[in-house]
Amino acid sequence: MPINITMPALSPTMTDGTLAKWLKAEGDAVESGDVIAEIETDKATMEVEAVDDGIIGKILVQAGTQNVPVNDVIAVLLEEGESANDIKSSQKVDTAKSPAKSDGSKPQPKADASKNSEKSPVPIEKSMTHQSETHDRVFASPLAKRIANDKNIDLSTIKGSGPKGRIVKSDLEGVSSGGAKSTQEQVNDPVCNSVEGLKKNVFGMTYTEIPNNNIKKITAKRLLESKTQVPHFYLTIECVLDKLMAARKEINEAANGEFKLSVNDFIIKASAMALKSYPAANVSWTEDAVHQYHSSDISVAVATPNGLITPIIKHAEQKGLRAISSQMKELAGRAREGKLKPEEFQGGSFSISNLGMFGIKEFSAIINPPQSCILAVGAGEQMPKVVNGEIKIQTIMNVTLSTDHRSVDGAVGAEWLQHFKRYIENPVSMLL
Image (cartoon, rainbow, N blue to C red; front, side, top):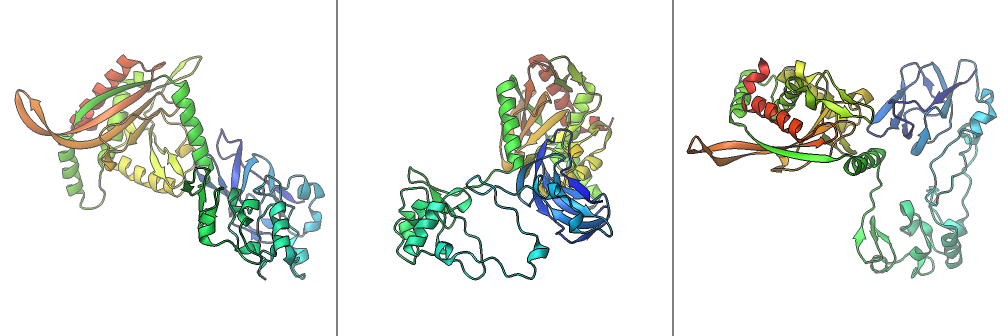
């Protein structure tokens, strides 16, 4: 009998997701393990694999549909010898989902492609839309369509200013019969308008609307909750980098191009070792108890085209600098491609946010709950320092530790920073 393909739970906390893309179409044969779709979760775009062999008999949730609940049927797989007639009507209708139109209404389900293959496309009234023979869809409000019909306006030549480019009444003001507004007329429109992707607000300011994806929405929600609900406490300390820079140079030269360590690799290792030697900071807060972790799982903030994500170097205290460097490069690359697995970015006991490569000298980062600490790393700068009564030029790096004061108070945070500083300023000690 037909097999339901459901929206998978790609992480323990996932309740819904966006069906970003179908990689198989109705009628395509699939084998177990074939990637059939891409699902956008709160932190990444994940691939969905078929668990059975068969033919995609019906796609019930169209690409681009948001907020599809976990376990909802998204497609139906036909086994050998079955046809579309074997699909229950409830599977076709009750679970069908499509992206909402810009006005909030749902479009009608698409007709079965197999039934329409020998028919010409249903014509759209020329008096209403005046589309070209390619039958490209034009989104317009009912009122805009009536105005276009009355004034014989070709809606395909109009740039809409409504949600997702929908044509509304104001877009047709000043449009002559059979034509469209000139570019200047559109720019001067006092109402929100769109010219080459630009819109204008009621204050006359032009802007481009960039929709928020799931990653940015969830990140924004979590950061707001963290900043408003977690009592942040900040501690800043200076670290001398000269020995670290010399060790890094020596190691990289000896590697002969096989690998190349970054300053961030040393920071990850030093953070992990400091948590090992001073575990009082390796904790998270809950209302019932403080959870103290037995390993240093370091989350590292990585900027991606879709937003911020924090891949994790697990058991970093047990790994060498070369292993940390290699794993970090691999995780960061897949993070930017949206290909991380949930277990690779969910969890972690401590976070690092490094903006030193951008020349940022010092900043404070927002804690990543349920963790209790995040280390903000600034750029290393050469500057004169008084050492034993003499002025010397040293490379100084400022780091700021943000702590959840409920579980890591000022004294604990300050003590952890002393351990971190010793490892950074004496990198050989990380090897012991």
